[in-house]
Length: 145
Image 1 (tube, rainbow, N blue to C red):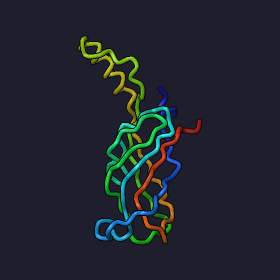
Image 2: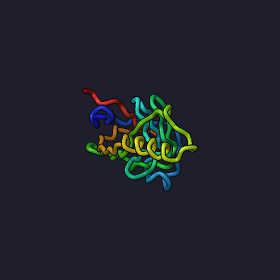
Image 3: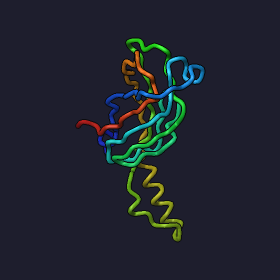
Image 4: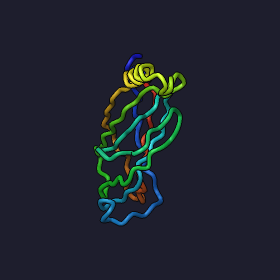
């Protein structure tokens, strides 16, 4: 597999609105859950935003997450970014051999682990001034090749 084909691009982040978090919990600006939407054919095995886990693994063309609690400063300023780290990998387990033949299982597991790719991208944080920030959603898109 070519790494370029499985490396999702992060097109951006969308801050959600409409939730109230106490300022002490939310770093002064608001905060909430970390969610993601996977627009790729690959599994997102795990992801984090600024080191805060999104908790969930996300299958192809699905949404997930639920990690708590992403927070932002009280005011957005131009140039603010977040770092998104994630692992993508094989999404299908159609060829899972079962556990009866341990050697076949270990071969299958090795193949699955070989498909895992580590990614990291720093992306701009959209302007959230004047909004009640309820969390953050990151979108994983297929590479444009």
